Image (tube, rainbow, N blue to C red; front, side, top):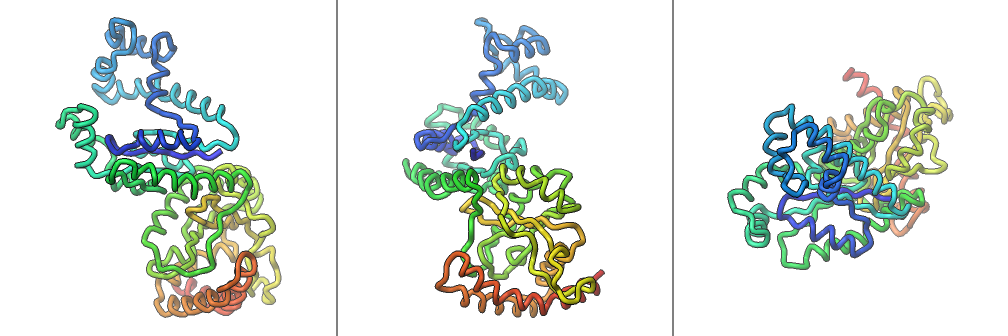
Length: 401
């Protein structure tokens, strides 16, 4: 099962996107509809609200008078807290019930207007934001929904900003265009990303990147931060730290379009205990990869002790954002090298130039090959260079300590 978070500001067109996803086969869970359902007449939720705020929040027909509730429940932080304490658990329980009833291979889309405001993005395996300019949204609210302009502006101002939405958006659907344009975007997203993502997760397949260098993408940092937020949620206290490492963490450096994340753990038993949770969150384990390429160390001058370089490797199942998740033990040679090498590249321009030339040579070696053959050719160039520069990295790190 794949969990997608769908959000967007008022008037952006989120309902259109949700409707299109239903037509394509998604299971859409509407948080607003659930919020109304759990306080419908005759429900324990409505009874709890009346017990807390009084009969004056009821309409003549016994249903919830929402403006009357808002008048008392949003009067101060204490009242708001009481309201949330009643409704949030009910909404959460009903949401969990609907998700649990979905098929194992479902693409579940949770339509959550306040996903950004409530900090729910890390709970989702992918966040889709529907965006439109304020002028466009205002026109839709006034002309299509009959909302007064002043009221529409006030509601828009009370919501998250586009900058805040961009920070959590794995996918941004631009809905400023002509009618029907956003539906075409949704269909392409469904076919090329969501369906393969769900299949990869269910089958335990990691998305792969081509062994081809691309210019540094300024979005790599934000993409890494979103992955790290999800990993923090999955790993909890088992993660000593989680870092963006590798070439994509170095500003201006061309790299394969592959995000490298390092999860530092206390021991390999902890890493193994996280395997199922990571896989369920969309980060399946790489079978057969149990260590980095050993390098000479004071404890192992021959560089043959693979146990010193033990790790566990997971990958992102999302074909739209390939990523390697390296689980390494704190203060192991591999864990320190990942951090020190990243910082060395960030600090030393001549080293970046040297490394880029090695990467270009590796790229040429992999050209024309595919799959494992391309990887073998690529790393056959890079690994010997790492063996040579490993002592230099250590010397640089020790000089900075």
